[in-house]
Length: 415
Image (tube, rainbow, N blue to C red):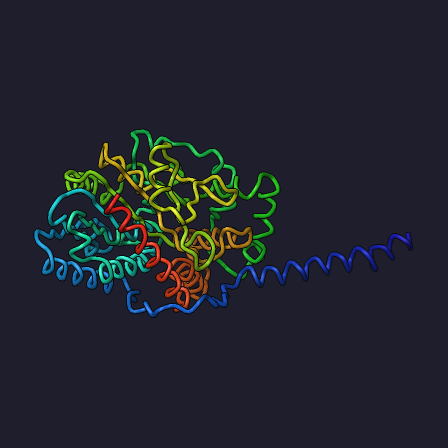
């Protein structure tokens, strides 16, 4: 008995204390968002980043008016998005037709995931400032779709007022909303807590421990796919794709079809932030046929495209790029999702941190926060995840965008 007591006292108890201390320090690091952002020196592009949805929309209206003065037959559209709380939400669209021969159409869309609209707006404004000139639009039309999800943009959410993720809500097949995601059901309790958010709770402090246990049961790619693919059964749950297309998706369908009709080739660049290595511009297409894949690889020759065959990738259903391809019909189509990485979510810890932020934000929206401090912290984390305040990050990702545009735009026009 004395030997057992000694073992407990001098071996097991110290080990337990050590494990608790290690886990505690890991949790402190897990719950912080701190990055050095010592990227290579870049030009200053910070003026392109808006401070609010309202200011971004005003800037886009000015951009559209400027385009109308520079080119002929420019059309400006506004799609009003119905809301129970805000009557002043619009998807704003500027269409500059090819001034001579209608050969190519370039589409830049932003804000499909509302809060990601800050960076998306900045890239659209930068594009218009640097590239929207007579040589580009001679044989190429340009369609700028601004703030596809204005509610999420304005109110710092990724989803719409109906809790719908538009990048899981854009149908390219008739059976999208009947899609089942069995893996999601298995992790439902982990990612959809049914109580108020208290960030300091042990449950949240040691979220990564629970998540690691789920990874142990399957793997990180399996967990990531189950969570992020999209689901159509739980309206208050994370990554809900809806039961029908959201109003702006329905409104965009005939408009995009009409504007794309005269052109032979269509290129979509859908602008996103969040996933991937911090400060790196990633290229994410959804799976496609071999012929289309070869065309896209030729267009992006020299850049790394993630085709979804790496361990740290996932695919989605109801994506906006696939929807646009379906809408334009049988045309030569070059879709690409530009994803600007923020939290190193290609790593295990970064991926779990990203998912945890999304869990807390949705949990707070659905069930409330234990305190105003909890609410502010969660909103701030969400904003940093999708619109980093770091000027170095903002400048560096725009430098990469400029490098890409300098190469692929001439290729697309001349191909």
